[in-house]
Image 1 (cartoon, rainbow, N blue to C red):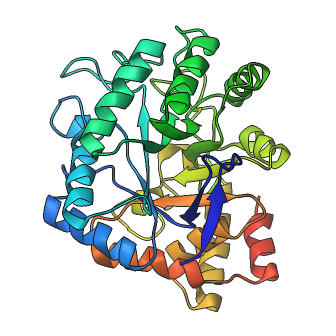
Image 2 (image 1 turned 45 degrees about the vertical axis):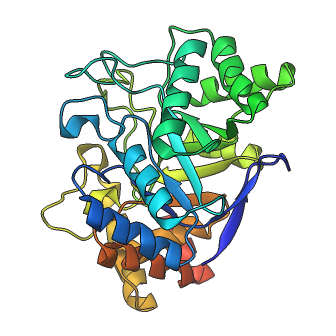
Length: 328
């Protein structure tokens, strides 16, 4: 395994593996025995960066979520897992009532909601401190300053380490970080967005983002990342849910444009040259590019995880990377 540092403050920054493991479906669609086996294999391989959320996976049973955090808590306890494994979780998008969702009835990002949700997450995870806590989705009903101060209070108390944000417009990320900096408070240092080799359209309306998706790491967010070297991008759904390799998993509708077939052709060509799978090339392209990107992979079996783990040792040539980046 290889590692990188997230965060800049010596008091809170952490060294994490270059490949993060997503636990979204652990405890629901992925049963406990399989989940424990995947987690054990990840740690055995040197993995140290596990990701979840307080609302995972509410849609599995129409409830409120929390199953993934609770499973991770049981796994940590049964395995005697200590501070060496960094567990990141998110808040703000948990439904307030069964049968609702993050679009119509989310808990939001008020100071009260942040405190209550963080306390509940710590209980489910069985930790005194959450290593990395994200604002999962935007809450434009709450002043940015209240949200910033709500998160900062938890850091000051020692119940949270690093702060991050996900699925926010880049201008709102910058505004929140500016408010934090002006007040001498900790701000967001890790950004979690959907990012992969294929480039999506970002103008397609979605329920949460009627003006177009804010969940993709588009040109503006990547430009922001280049300008702020202290930030790290955690890239969720880097393998597009299996769409690169599975005939039963077509690419999502927002990737249906003329650039996609050309990029896929070059990707397959590079994979043949490298003696690697298409998925491994995508992950290596992310991990070792010019920007600090940590791919966040899911796995419903040890075999799936092993394929992703093998990408850690895959080195693309400069020519191969240039070709992958050069397709328009």
